[in-house]
Image (cartoon, rainbow, N blue to C red):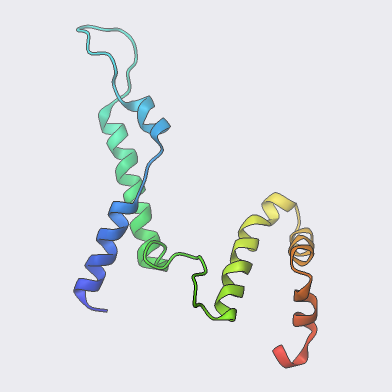
Amino acid sequence: MTDSALIDRVVATVYSAGVSKAEVDLEWPTCHKNKCQASHGSPEMAFSYMAHSIAEALKLELMARATTQPDVAEDGDSPECVAVYTLAALLTRYRPEITSTYVRAARLIIDAYPGMVSALNDPATA
């Protein structure tokens, strides 16, 4: 990978990183009265949230191209690629933490795509 390609990935990631407005609003001072006794948060903490968000986005981009090559199927993708993205979305949605067991998660995926049963049992696809 060339340096300019890496720089382009980093710049795209920095500009696409986001932070929760609710988190920042809690830390952003709103009162400007002298000697106010109320707690108003700190701009340093608000900027810390923003820096953390950018750092996490950069880590995901450098590890998995999460910004420049997101996990979504596009027009013209091969059927295998579309199947991979669909399965990835299902695995995200039906995690054992949500469904309580791996078997329950697998059953929900099979219910969503019954054609997987024949594909998984076909020796030609193994």
